[in-house]
Picture 1: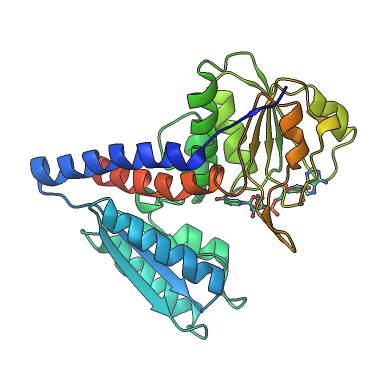
Picture 2: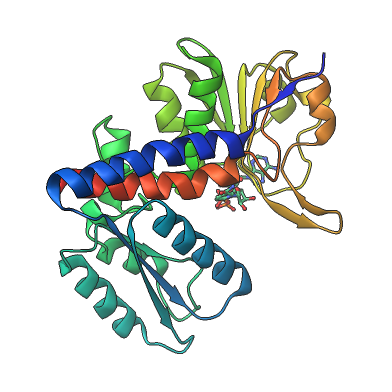
Length: 280
Ligand code: NAP
């Protein structure tokens, strides 16, 4: 068996069209142009690229894009003041502070300063609480995009066994919640999990969000399983995921790296901004 590729880029293009329609509708019916503010502190090259891409996609979706570039030695107090002003700004529906921030800042403090309704990254504890309680709220972008790819590929997920590798607040835990909502039976694995291979072999859906290049090999995968590779690892051979390419030989469907989960992440940010504009 050779598994087919889940084309994240194509899914993202389709979704972008739907988001553009929703934006146009908001503008023409209610005179509301959704606005996304991105704050970048410092000059990390990878963050620069992410922020530029977000700005381009925000404008392409017909939304207002605001960028705040702060020098690396900006005090935490000043950055938090900037965030508080954005909380009050009526034309801003979504606020994203690009992480990582310089070492002298508390990432958690920043997350908790953003108004939950404008927290398009979905990391505020209020939003994590909503997600864990099965309520509406902002859902982190990468997990949301990953869950959507699974849903659009398989349809009904009821009763399937999903194994999620990774338990971060950013990726692993929210994916677990989203798969529970879809009535999967979910197992969470992390660095202390014993018998990882056996657990992985029992998965109908295997989500790898660890950050270790090629750690999932084909002997760890149940024939016919669907594989979502969230990992992004820079190696001498370029960007690779957590899942080795040989897994294609046993999986039914698999997301590539790059071109799988990555393109979905930015689109979900647009989607969260429209959601915030609609609901607030
Ligand atoms: P993270 O915070 O470092 O979390 C990694 C998780 O993997 C932790 O829960 C850790 O367990 C677990 N882990 C470590 N070694 C393991 C092992 N041998 N077996 C099983 N689990 C193990 O990373 P993250 O922020 O969640 O990101 C995970 C990956 O996704 C990274 O490669 C990141 O670059 C990528 N990512 C991609 C996107 C995208 O848009 N495509 C977005 C975000 C992140 P412990 O909790 O026990 O330490």
